[in-house]
Length: 148
Image (spheres, rainbow, N blue to C red):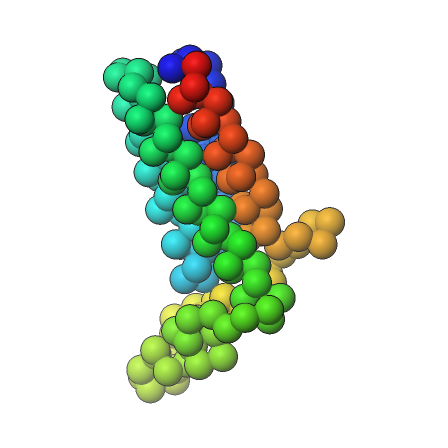
């Protein structure tokens, strides 16, 4: 495996995960599905670090699988945001069911971010959509890394 390709492929996940934390810092709290999209990025980063130590092709394909997983979640999340299909009831229309009465009455209660609401978009694409686009690019980069 080519080390440069591994670094670039894992770097996409570093950038996307870092971007998610930057958005969170600037007041865009993540929803449940946003968190789901973060876990495969963390796995891709770990796989990338391991692939730099042990250059096994299988690690490249596992990195591609991690990137494909977050891309698929991003596509699903985008569809939920656009109302193409229903999302999990815990973070869409029925999301208040997960909170206790005390939480709802407190001044500093939980921040409930709905998965079916677009909190930020650029060029008509939400954060979930951009995650899907760049994660699909990462899939291609991981496959290139695995084949070299």
